[in-house]
Amino acid sequence: MAKSTKAKTSRAKTTRAKKTSAKTASAKKTTPRAATRPAGLARRPQGLSVHLGLNAVNAASYEGWSGELNACEFDAKDMETLARSAGIKPTVLLTKNATRAKALGAMRAAAAQLKSGDLFFLSYSGHGGQVPDVSGEESDKLDETWCLYDGQLIDDELYLELTKFAPGVRVLVLSDSCHSGTVTRARPTPVPPGQRSKMMPAGVAMRTYEAHRKFYDDLQTAVARESRTASRLDPDAMLAHVTVSNRLTSIATTAQAAILLVSGCQDNQTSMDGDHNGAFTEQLLKVWNHGKFKGNYARFHGAIKAAMPVSQTPNLFSLGPCAAFAAQQPFTI
Image 1 (cartoon, helix red, strand yellow):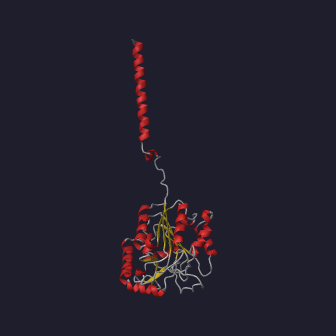
Image 2 (cartoon, one colour; image 1 turned 45 degrees about the vertical axis):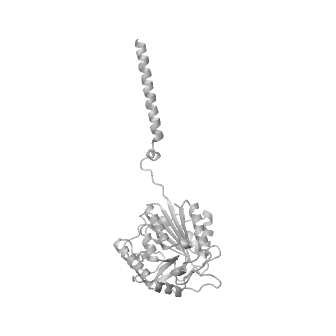
Image 3 (cartoon, helix red, strand yellow; image 1 turned 90 degrees about the vertical axis):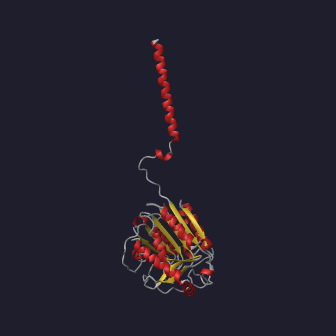
């Protein structure tokens, strides 16, 4: 009897052990993967991009001027390809889809999603324009613009949107347009014979502004008001951080994100259109060479600049805490 009792007890223990092992195995299978990650595991950085390319604008929004160009959509698509190859998730807005609402919406969606360590890449290819400055911030009394399909995006608006990115986010802006250099302005140089400029004609710019004066004036006033009430960097004052600018303004605060702008030309020059790419984008892609380029952003800009004609000199400036960002390999997440 003793032996039988001991055998039953042994079998019972074995059965309980098997059940416990089975429960443990089942729990492991149903445990979410995230729950098994070691505590404190670093979040992997992500990259988002927005690419704007306009081969024309809506004539109804520009007083009969449609501003046809050849290569801007190609520029945006090539920037999309570059972004994908770098692991960046792109959004592309071409001509009729490159409206003010969609462009601003895409930038704001990225700003809401990205966190410290992430990368935002914004590219624009199209006409550059100007509107009279009513906020009293521009020394030449003109605000620079990107000509989107249904209206212009004023530089103050763009700079304000960039201040909304979280601290530690890296922002790269490539602008293949006229009036895209710095805040140092002079009389534009003549367009080389036989080439198409990306500059909105001055007469068209003034007609467009006069026809939509309230809209553009209200935009500037709203941006100036938000800049002050949000305690962020004033859109024009932030450009005093520009490394190559001679214009000095009072600093309200500092940019939270690290922002680099590589532009197609100086403010007194014109960016040229092409058959497949704009002149600036064409050289940028050649220098990048499908990712074979090695070096930081300063070397990248320098190599592009060296390949351009004297009539078009790409510019580079930085906003916010950019030292570490500028030292990185371009387009690195």
